[in-house]
Structure formats: C-alpha cells, structure tokens
Image (cartoon, rainbow, N blue to C red; front, side, top):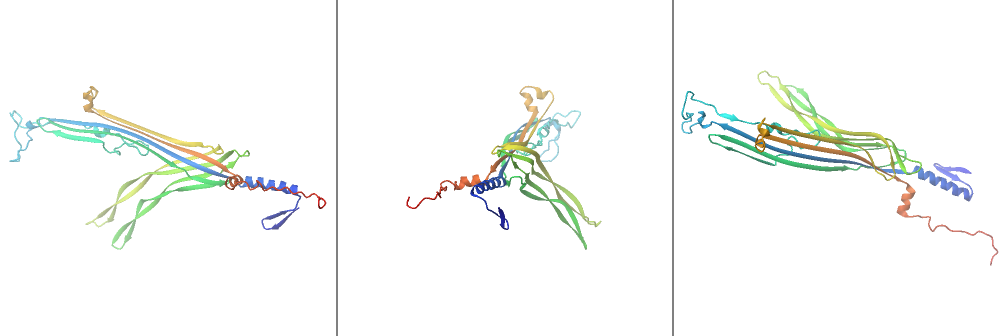
Length: 356
C-alpha cells in the first residue's frame, strides 16, 4: 500500500522483503538520474616560425673627381676636371643595385609570422669608400626562430541528458566611426565605439550509454574567436567650412582583424578516454631571391649581387575532449567509505522458553 505523506513525500507500507526490493529500485533510479558527466576540453595551439635574411647592397660610382662636380670648400664653386677636352663636364658613372628591399619576404597568412621585418635586424654594417671610385656597401644578416605553445582547458560538469553552455573571453572596444555634433558657431566630433568579442564558446548535451561505459554527444559545438590585430586608418573631415579659414580634422578609424575556429559534430567517447575532435594546420612559406642576371650565377662572386630571404611559418590547433562519468554513490564511497560494512546485525526472534 502506498500513500502520500505530504508534498513530495511517498509512504510505502509493505513487507520486509518488498521493502528491500523497493529500496534497490530507488537506488537504481537515483544512480541513473543523478549520474553526471565531467567534461574537460583542451585547445592546444602550437606555433613554429623561422626566418633567414641575408642581404648585400653594393654600389659603385666611377669618375667622381673628373666629373666637374667637386666643390671647392674655399670658393664654393665647382672645380674644373683634370685634362679638359671638348666637354667641360662629364657625369659620374653609377652602378647601383636595389634588390635588398624587394627581397625581404612579406609575412605569410599564419598568425605570428616573422616575415615583413617584424623580427628586426640581427646584424648590419654599412660604409663608404670615397675616392676616384666610390664604393657604398650595406650588409644585413638575420636569422630568427620562434616557437610558442598555448593551452586552454575549460571544464564543465553536467547532468546526464542536459545541455551545458560555457563561454568565457575578452571584449575589445575599438573606434568604428565618428559622429558630427553641430552646435552654434562650432562643430565637434564624437567617436563611435564597437565591441569585438574574442571568446571561447562550448555547447554540449552528453548522454551516458546503457552499459555505462561510453558518453554520446549527439550535438556538440565549439567555437573560438581570436583578435589578430586592429588596423588603424585615418579619415579627414571638414570641421569648419569657412572659405577663408577651412579646418580639416584627421580622425582615426579602426578595423579589427579576427580569426574564427568552429567545430560542430557528434561523437562517442569512452569513459575516461580522450578524443581528438578536430583541428587546423596552417603552413606558410615564402622565399624571395633577386639579383643581377649572369653576375648572380657566378660562383662566389655572384653572392655580391644576390639577396635572399626565406620565411617558414607553421601553426597547429588541436581540440581534445576528455569526458568522465560520475556516479554519486561511487564518489561518496570513495570519499567516505562504505557505511554498510559492519552494520549488518542478525536478530533471532525465535520463541524459546525462559532459562534455556
């Protein structure tokens, strides 16, 4: 017989054996309903960059002293060339190479690239030899290597069959535009700001399998947004249209450059196992070489007329999932021990005569 003893109460009146069966049923219901899943997500970002820049700029200028362009420091006038002929002026003969600037490799599409001169200069020496033949030289040599690792490991615990949503990150404000405020005899501008959200978002709904050994994710979405840089541009706005004294104000405007990584999938993971959900691998390689035709191919001597630059960038993003099933009774037993051990007491209720 079952009766209600009040709100959210159930009173059962049955035999001892039936009470034991009912207790086991309630334990099974509590075990299945109260089961929880602890989920650890790991986002591993590995970046590796290498840059090598070797440049030589060698310029020659011939016929300097006889060019008629030497200035007398006392008179300030041009000196006449030695052994004048039919011409009283001859121009210098210049041999100039300008391949160093173009040979510098630009950055690749991989974030954190060392291209484009972001790594600076490791070694640089320059000088000039001034004589009848002028020689200008510039030597630049740089080799840089960069390796970085970043790990994000958000955790969440959710009941069996329930949805969990995890979101954390940063918000960056930037100037997206300007608004003109017109007053009496004056005009001002007010910046308009916007927000770029760089956050990590995870939406999951896990289920425990019937054998209690696997976790099934029928719907799972993981998204990460990263801010690469804020590009700044300058716009000009006419503040005062007075024809006699116009005022033009320069106003900066920022444009965010973001990167999004998103995975939506379903998976089956063993209890306590680790699953590679997905990832992304970016590889960028840029190599530039510029020199003088024919001269750049001569052994040893060709190095004086050649500039080389090489950039290798690699970035790997791995998204890992590690679920663990939590049963309340098992966890309580691990922490507090078994309260049932040593508490069983046998009672003999047989009727026996007194004194026997």
